[in-house]
Image: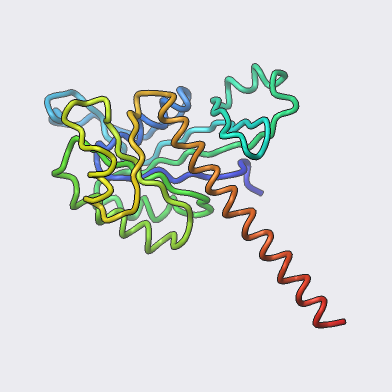
Length: 218
């Protein structure tokens, strides 16, 4: 049995903002990382070498409600406030972006329900790696809900979400700053709604197929 309702696989190129996003959504998230030997774009930084793991609750007043995202530890303290709400526990699983860590990404894909593909919109130089990881995701996940994120919209040199979508050859990208809780939360909620709709569709289809089979057997 899974200890969560949905697992979101968070991927993208090196330094795209995956770890930042997860820790923005869950300040108590765990990260396996190391300091970088050289500054990245003039700043001290770390890089994920294993994985990031966060746990949050997706809370809604109704199925149509976009919902709230609350860190699991915070929800435990305040759960009484949401007695009548729909509750789903979400695992956020971040993976390394360097291409040579493909074996780690492969290991972490099991039981994934949806994908956040994060791109640094201020760094056109990473587009080759982004396209490679996107192709990797499409090959591995097929029709699983996948959202492309144009991160770092807080930077003046960031490309627009529309430009990032053009770079990658996708229909749409969603602009956020992974440092900003509200835009990060909204992006995750939108992906979760897509997962829920897809899951509901599969359930409905399965029920319809069973009913049709029963009719044929009568």
